[in-house]
Amino acid sequence: MSNVTRDVLVKKLQDRTARVAVIGMGYVGLPLATVFAEAGFEVTGVDPVAEKMEALNRGESYILDVPSEQVARLVKAGKLKGTTDYAVLSEMDAVSICVPTPLRKTGDPDLSYISSATESLAPYLHEGMVVVLESSTYPGTTREMVLPQLNCRYGLEVGRDFFLAFSPERVDPGRKDWTTKNTPKVVGGITEACSDVATCWYEQALDTVVRVSSTEVAEMAKLLENTFRMINIGLVNELAIMCDRLGVDVWEVIDAAATKPFGFMKFTPGPGLGGHCIPIDPLYLSWKMRSLNYTARFIELASEINTSMPRFVLGRITDALNNQGKPVKGSRVLLLGVAYKPNIDDLRESPALDLIHLLKEKGAQVSYYDPHIPHIHADGDIEEMDSVTDWRAEVQAADCVVIVTNHKVFDYPAILELSRCVVDTRNALGEAGKKSDKVVRL
Ligand code: SAJ
Image (tube, rainbow, N blue to C red):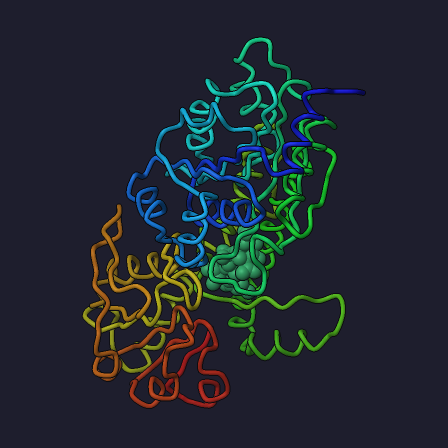
């Protein structure tokens, strides 16, 4: 079916004269904005945090994965700029929405960021605009929430006058091998024409675009990716609990299973599930399914097991202290590594925070050492804490050292030598830990 609006927009996307905006310039939006700018588009980042936009316009990056040199070069070339003023969207032809989708305290999805970004965009929606939502969310969000909010612009018809699609972000902060540019990108539109336009746009800048038939397929693909991880992590965490009851070394079991060259993927147990994706995205799906009177049992069970791991680790710490004739109460417990995964400075949903809370509830004297996280800010049950600095002295003074996050900067042989007892939740000490009678592993 001929569609002049679509054809004109596709032409502008292909010759890079289309004006591009990214709403939400965080760890997803800024890398995406730089990829579009590198491809030759003039890109405007829109974010409510003025300090970030001011830094951007000074040619400074505030995201680890994006070098300031690149930002400075693109800003100087007039290809990238930042603003807090949503009115610029009236001049834009292509808008990507990259805002957070956290959980509320109740455990329900918090779609307020998507809703407010869409509300801010709606007054400026015009004929010949394409909008792509990137935020991880439940299947149906783009069609059931974003589209109605945009449809308030009377007379504009989706798929004819403007185009709307979903493309899940696949950013893994800190990763060098897979980047925004070279990671295959799934794109699905509300209509065929929407898919045409959004796919064409992303193909101008990204190495591989995978077109799917609808926004729901694209939304669900993302949730499958992260639910797959969450459930398999839950499986190996339950395996750790079962192996503990069986008196079998779960690490040896997993290493043995991982020698199978096909049909198996290695996951490892730990103190729980942290991060802003894996513990959260699957709960968007189970929440949506409950509204359809269906219980996503795998997700709910895996979530239950993963959230029980800090308490399981507390049990191992209690046993380790008990073996020394010490109660948890009053004992000095040092946590090594509190970030949610190794070698990053991100605390979001970190199981270390739950473990600190549980230990303090039992009356332990808790301290932590994490060179990536000098300070823990108070938040709800979480008390303000500073990382210790002299880790050697603290390891020696502790009644129990707990390796929670296995950062590569840690000196594991020294930790083993200097400590009285270690609970190693990541098998960070390896064979040396397995052989030592002062080490308890998950
Ligand atoms: N974890 C385990 N055992 C494992 C793997 C992870 O306990 O075998 C824990 C981690 O310690 C962490 C949590 O699970 O607390 C999440 O770890 P993750 O490796 O999944 O890292 P994330 O949360 O940064 O996940 C991101 C995701 N990327 C996107 O959503 C775009 C995920 O899809 C990636 O697969 C993952 O990075 C990755 O592979 O690094």
